[in-house]
Amino acid sequence: MKLTQAFKKKEFVITSEVGPVKGCARNGHNAAFIAEAATIQPYVHAFNVTDNQSAVMRLGSLAASVLLKQAGLEPIYQITCRDRNRIALQSDLLSACTLGIDNVLCLTGDHLKMGDHPTGKGVFDIDSVQLLDIARGLNQGHDMMGHELTAATDLALGAVVNPNFQPLDLQLLKMEKKIAAGAEFFQTQAVYDPKLFEAFVRKVEGVGVPIQFGLVLLKSPKMGTFMNERISGIKVPQALIDEMASVPPEGYKDKSLEIATRLLKEISPMVQGIHFMPLGWSDLVPQLASTARDAAR
Amino acid sequence: MIGTAKKPFDEILAALKGFQKIGMVGCDGCAKVCLTGGSDEVAALAQELKTQGKEIVFEASPERTCNMAKAKPVLDPLKDKIQASDALLVLGCGGAVQIARYVTETLGLTLPVKTGLNSVGHMDTTVPGQIAIEQCQECGDCILNDTGGICPVTKCAKGLLNGPCGGSEDGKCEVDPARDCAWVLIYNRMVALGEVDNLKKFVGAKDYSKAAKPRTLYIKEGRVA
Image (cartoon, rainbow over all chains, first blue to last red):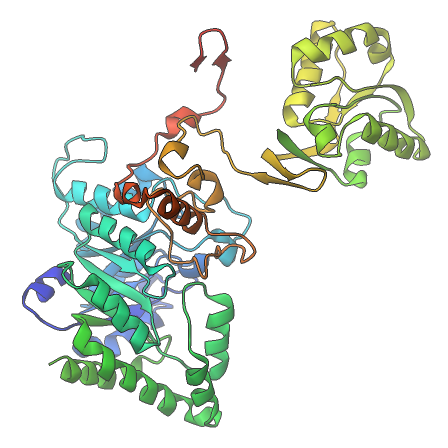
């Protein structure tokens, strides 16, 4: 099912995320990531399947997306520009549609230096805006050079935006380009400051494209500090890190739920959906999804 | 200029293994600016090689070893000494090394031509004697007219053409927090110039055929092929 259909029906769209394993998952082996996703299937519309996230080599996002589909789950196939040139990207989009994928999220991709193959050569032949434009072309029945396809793709095209970005106007400029290039829905980078998110939402009122608030579950104070120091584009307020640190480690999960609940109550009314990045705590998603839906009503 | 950095001495010795008589060719152009291959650096490395038992047959540093017009007048008269050498060691960019080899071929000589440097890019000197930075990829299709005179193809680690990636934070690049995000620089420059609306234009996929290597520049015709 294309996510765009759910947005059109004014459903509050909940998605979660799975990271493919670093290994072969043939014949159902090594597929715990699918089992984790399956446990929350009734509570979400679809699952992002990350593409060698953080530039760490893993099972491909297309193969993992197909495995999800075979397991009856709805994948959002993430595709980045880091590892493929324009021929490979277009070919993979054709492959994705051929294999039954309905949703694709077009990203630039983390730089190789961030991952486990830092000596590799980054491709970045095209960027995420161009990729959206190219994917739209495939939907219209032609490749990026204008050559006609024997059959067009039919993919819902998603994109990302980072409300933490400074200067925000530059990020919005790129967001507008993505919309003009064919983006049909957005997922945001993780944001932990409702005021900052509200300022972003006010700026994008009227863009006419649904936005899902991105929420990475904060699992420990250490994780908050790590994200501030090592993950570009995410800012965790010190007050939240301190709040997390105010409880013993066995209380982190309850505190994480409490913080996420608070954020969702404030932010859900501003958006058309939530994108959870639970990092192994998928069992919190059902309750949080319910909180978000209630808050959005 | 072409930036160069010295190879580790052990690597140079390994490249010269089995060769006793060494002819040394520097470059008093870019390599001199980089303090890697001018006359002074050639002399210094020659001394080091002597301490390792090598015999230095000659030292020469053309003004631009990458240019036949400069290299040949210096090296041609050294034909006998080149012939007497077991190998040449060039302290210049990769182009200088290959021009030096080419000169030996025009002299009818066949001997190994080794390099003592690594070429590290088209570099612009910002602090003479200290800092040179990479600002141009020679992509063959310059877009500086549209980006406030700041090149995203080079200065953005991902070469993005339509704006920054999500990894930029506080104006710095995710790859190296000490490095400015090229797109924040471009944006600020375009705001200052009153041209920020130009950044709203969609920039299509780059024509990398213009950078397809190896290119030949036909100087008189101004043609690249």
